[in-house]
Every structure is written in structure tokens, then in C-alpha cells.
Length: 130
Image (cartoon, rainbow, N blue to C red; front, top):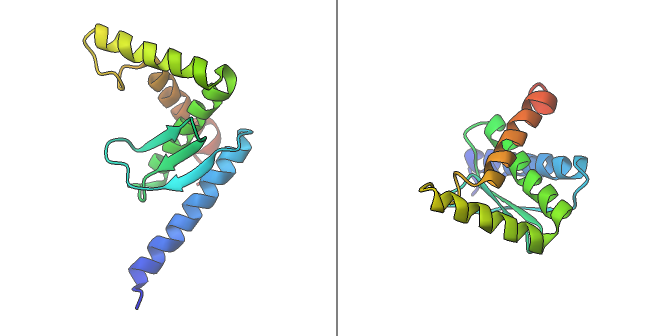
């Protein structure tokens, strides 16, 4: 028998799926949305398969929306530069961060840009909508 809590979680995930797919469409992309266990990050973008991978739960709606927007920005970057060129630029930026003694991911300029864009978009367009 399914508990009320499990039903609520299923409904919440369906709502999140719908919101994420509508955001992807809003920004003119065709990326797929998948919910899965992601141990380190809040979300991930698989540029080889054009899939935005999201956690199964988020502490609040803002965190969820900003995570989706962050990955949408990566999808837009791949669309703009192409997979091969973007991967080269992304790896190069990670290598530069390591060279300077920082974390490959946290100080990668492409990650910083995506995070800043996501927060800016959230505050500009989506803050009062959810």
C-alpha cells in the first residue's frame, strides 16, 4: 500500500518534471529532464545526450529552479559553441583553475557564469512566479 507521503513525493516530482520541461522550452531548447541520484552536485548536464539530470528532491523551490536554470545555461553554451568546442573550453578552464591552485569545478569560469546567470534569471523572471 502506498502511503500519503509517497503520493505527495510522486506528485511533487511530476510537478518538478513539468516545471523543468517548461523552462527548457521557454529558453528554446529540447533538452530532456531526468531525476536521479546525484551525489555531489545539485544537478548535472550531460552534453553528449542533451539531458539535464536533477536530484530527486530539493530543499526549496528556489534551489530547484536555480539548479534547472544553471543547467539550461550549460545547454545554451553547448548549443552556441558546439559540443566539441565547448568541451575543450570547459576542460581548459578547469585546468586553469587547478593550475592556479583551485578546485577544477568550483573555480571553473563556465560554472561561475552559469551560476551567476541562473541567479540573475531567477530574480529577474521567476522569483515571484513560483
